[in-house]
Image (cartoon, rainbow, N blue to C red; front, side, top):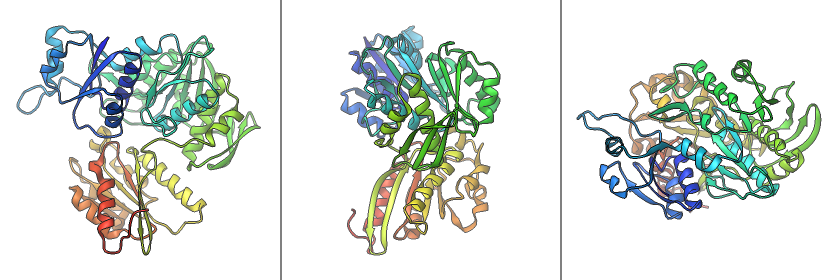
Length: 477
């Protein structure tokens, strides 16, 4: 069929486009504000991308329009609809569906779905799990909200293999499905293996409180069959409350002292204990307690489909990670030392703190405790733009020597919110000023950690160019 995807450059919808293309469908799509890595992936797949939401796209006459949750019935200040194409679809009575529903009906049906849910770590844990299954020869399909470096693509169909139910790993997002379906995306996926990695308040634009999100997580549990397995973080009280609402499947826990799966050792080198007995050892290049917990979750999920913890640990030793997760974007050599620029998707305060902690632990383990981390971030998510979590920002940024906030588009006072950090905090309403602030403060040996769930205006390249242009800067490594 020919499908036309509205919002094709989102991480989920772009992955769906890749799956549809691989399955032999004709795929076109539209979006606004396109940026890598998804735009690069779509171009490589030869998928036609139209900029904007003009109603004249109706002339494409696809078999179905697949609508992303970026689309709404909203109108601008002039009273005109912001998504004219959606209005035209409705007026014409054309066939349309949501991305998660199309995926469930055309890709996931008949497969053993392994769904990874949680406020943080979904992308990395999904990538770990897919890589473990690949290493074990299972050739899984997957759809991940980022680009795993081990695969180079965010989605693929996978191979049937000898299994009655081919395996499919999916990042299970709790955000709503579409403007016409306010259920969480993951309710459509019907997993047989469900990971509940962690759970705290987020998405203040669609959820009133944490209890509302917990209800959606319990809706996910209701879809897991009795022969399925739920793998839950034993450290999270919120997940315990979800489980207490009713559990209908086999349960395995990880993380806590009393859990089925535990870690013993530092995050970069630890033993995996199953019910108190060592069954594997993970030695790898990732840092942070959060990644240690992600690894336990992935190992437990893989064991449900027959992969031993020892084989899973062997796979993780070679795991390269995911783009935009502490991804090094540039190294600038100077007489006083190298300045390293990173890109990271962190945008929730907990994720920001966790990312800073992970990088700090990595540097300390390498014998570099004196090297500074400069946090450069934009509160871009809907939740952060609303200012719902502004009070948590000083806590989130404790691990940074200096913090630089891009304040464009905010309706709340970022300088006031960051005041507890004192002279360590800086704000700027435009990127040129932000870059100038960072470059003036940076010195050799610094680590510039850029955090955003968007393109951040290409701040990584701007910083690299400005640092190279300084009289003291030498050629990039």
